[in-house]
Image (cartoon, rainbow, N blue to C red; front, side):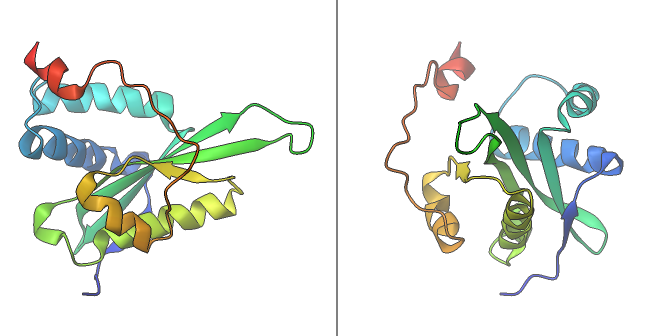
Length: 162
């Protein structure tokens, strides 16, 4: 199904929408507890100001209302003699409100992010998809990496229970 969503790179004018979408995803849908919505938004505004050079946000709107977001985290890598400027990207926190899923909104978000990553001449993009989103990322050209390893210190579930 084709989406009628408008997708664009977020600006500081979109910070309230970004905070609201993040809060909705992590607390209402994900069950996380902690800060109130207002408290989260205040802290999120501060976080965004400190990180907006390395964390590029994208917003999807339908009829002027924010319905989804995605983030591109740009990582400066250690220089090498052949290629001195080495940068990679991480796709993070792709979220579309449940009522707008499976309509192409997520695809538009990630395609926009991929286009910007190519324009920025990033070496590669990574993502940590959920099991249910593996096929989504594969359709967009992501493939399993042979050399990626991960060391987790404390699973999120254990942090919630303590």
